[in-house]
Length: 155
Image (cartoon, rainbow, N blue to C red):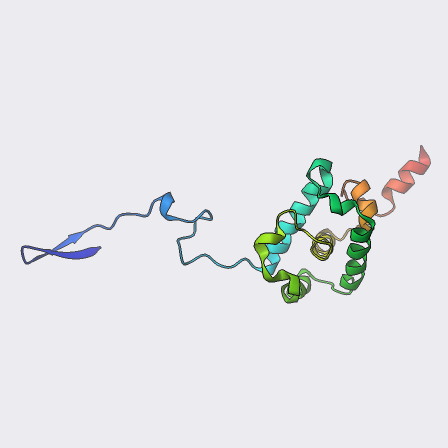
């Protein structure tokens, strides 16, 4: 409550409640918005990558290039020793490309970011993804190890 004086008498008036217009898009008041954590960023990037892999019309053209696939697979090899999402998020936070999170979510998802996103998915569900080019053809859907191959052999 605000304290005002009228005719030398203190008057207490109720404060106006903040409206939606006063709040930022996330529902957080201005000045209190927290910076995105590496874990949240990796989750968003992984979901964006999955959506774009599944929808051919949403994929950036460079994702189909051989050089892009080689670089994604090379970075993924370097990320294999990381065994937890906490460790992966810490590594992601240290990367030099991670300077501007806002540009990572759009079409500028590069090979390093894509490799981190795939490793994030692998650590989440325990399903190893195939190489990048194979994953693009398979529409990004993980297949349990051995189940599909055995069922195809019986048909």
